[in-house]
Length: 78
Image 1 (cartoon, rainbow, N blue to C red):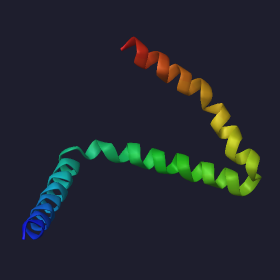
Image 2: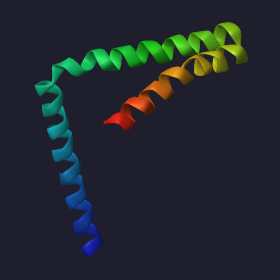
Image 3: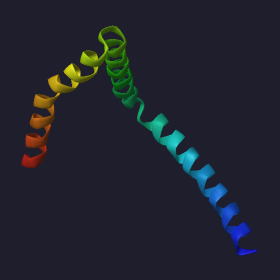
C-alpha cells in the first residue's frame, strides 16, 4: 500500500535528520552558552512569578520593551 511505504520513508528521514542535528551540535560547541543564558532567564522569570505573583509576570515583560524596540531598530537598519 502506498501509505505504508510513505510511513517507512518518513521514519528514515527522521533518523537521518536527528543524526545531522547531532553532528551540527558537535561541530558548533559555542552554542551552549546561549541555551544556558536562555534557561537562566526563563528560570529567573518563573522565580519572579512565584515570589511576587502577577506583578512578577508583567513587570519583567515591561522592562524588556525598550530592548525589543532597540532590536527592531537594529533589524530595520540591516
